Image (cartoon, rainbow, N blue to C red; front, side, top):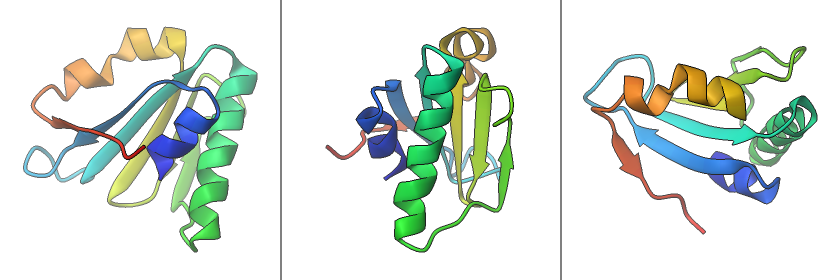
Amino acid sequence: MAAKAIAEKKGQEPLILDLRGVTLVADYFVIGSGTSPVQVEAIADRVEEILQERGIRPLRREGRQHGRWVLLDYGAVVVHIFHEEERKYYELERLWRDARITPREQ
């Protein structure tokens, strides 16, 4: 649902990393990016809206005030929404390269 929300807001390269068996941090990371702080915030808003409609609320939110990297922690699923520059810099996909990439539902 989070990856679908990223795509709905024209987020770049929505990706789901299956971290099960790789780390205890989370089962999945959902990663996406926007081209501006406004788009990053809009994507985060949409992710929260879609999940909240299903009764799912984040345990924690980080980074909303800057619009460069928003983290939405749902426990087993952590959603990272980056500004495109931060996504290139931090390269979570490379950092967690042992994780399987899971196709998102259309």
